[in-house]
Image (cartoon, rainbow over all chains, first blue to last red):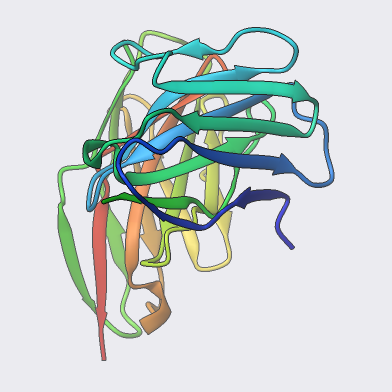
Length: 114
Length: 112
């Protein structure tokens, strides 16, 4: 069964809406989780590293005020896309896991902003 | 900087035949890990196989094997006895620190 659960799987909303995506580790504690963005037929691009109890580390070019990350517990990280616009439409996917071990990925969230 | 290169945007293979998906990498680290993931059209990322830089033997997992050539910095994925369900996008990835950097991916289509 899935070890990382991501919710919702699909979101369609109006421009200007803020959207929250949850990523939960189901049977292990994750001090670190990762958020990726993927455009159609392209690779996964790391957006940020979510650190439990501290600020997220964002990759270069990712707006931290646009993509708010909260990692308040060892099993939950959330990504909030604030005031979403059509260009934020994408596939967002999270992962968690230990170093030198396969990352466990959520099933992803398809975000469509109208 | 770490870099992963997958030069095959798309590949076709006949059902029941073997196929090799290419992956080369660039790193100055001595210790690193290489992964292959499969992504079906539904979007989930499925772990296939892992190779550590100090592993002396090539990794194998069922029908998947990794042809690891350290001196050439290549980590090609070999899928034997292809099945229709193998049609998907395949990503090679390298771990640096605790992050993963992905290649551009290869779309594999298995023909019946």
